[in-house]
Image 1 (cartoon, one colour):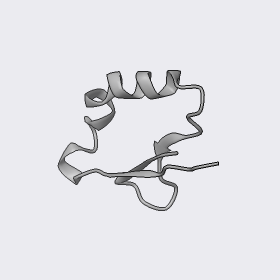
Image 2 (cartoon, helix red, strand yellow):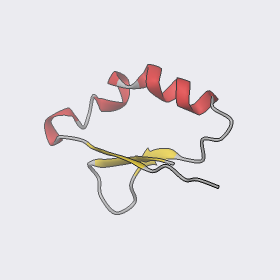
Image 3 (spheres, rainbow, N blue to C red):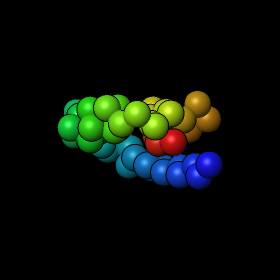
Image 4 (tube, rainbow, N blue to C red):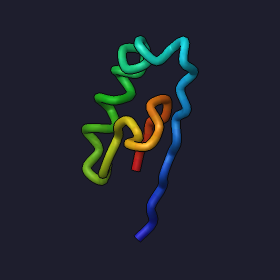
Length: 51
């Protein structure tokens, strides 16, 4: 099994609009069968992770 982890550091000035900007991407990766997680990091408010 191979895990791919992607970190998305978000600049503070884009924090409030970032999810709207990546809505199409979020929908596409959520449709992938093997996507385990996409969301805000629990230890950093300006970091999102995709597994």
